[in-house]
Image (cartoon, rainbow, N blue to C red):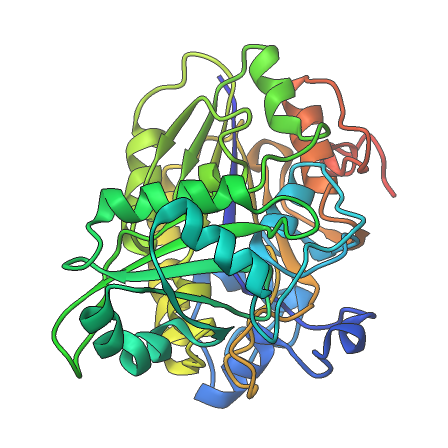
Length: 395
């Protein structure tokens, strides 16, 4: 049976958002700027699919006959965070942005947090996660107080050393925080940020966990579940949808584990139609937020090598969509997400070579296309590009 697969290259934008200035992101172009900074990227498989036809990327020129359909997605939701982007990819548009706290959280929020959890707080500012554990890690070890911080995104992050707050205890505290943070302080995500190590050499562990707001009605995923179509998630996907409509979840700590898990799932013959969702977080977490264009280059080239083998095994009647959820330009002074258009690559081998899908006004066109492909009711918003791919609509 036919499968639909979504691969989200987290944070891999292609610039061009008409409202970028409203978010302070004029000039941000994650893929383009990264490639220029490092002197070019080698990605022959992405090139063959048509990545260079979407956007000028040094080292990835356009091809005459791309294998995939290609275009751009322009986000219409208010915001530029992972939750907002992933929700829109599955059909749910967010009209009001989640609250952000560039100057830290109000006293009443932290006082209630301490009352409910029994822990004091240090930090309370927007900061880089790797920097703040070096800055406050010693004080955290001495005092037992938790490091609470945020970023330009709508997040309430709690960092704790595993000797002060074991992993399960940190998760318990985060669950309390998630329940506590209701409007007007309903942040998009509460994030557990465990770390370990000795003074001067603290490092994060791979056991981050995200606690997202439960999405309101409008997602495609519960619709598929009701129709008996399994939805299988890899990586942080389940967290971003708060489990809504997810049949089974497969955690991964990095890109390599996520790609290996997708290979494992694809190796099992599909007994029925299904949707598989994969988020590759390293592009955002390791290289975008840390302004590491060379790391992002290596990661993209490693993904491209894996992609070649994956495509060799890809069934003709399957559907693959590759895109991103926002930008995260590693060449700008900011270490936060950027408002950008995102690439769209769509492979449907049974329907021949690809073509140009143009600029799609809204990420939710992906959800509409998956619904069309899987024979499910269409989400309330979004226009399917499946008729274009099957040549039923030449436009």
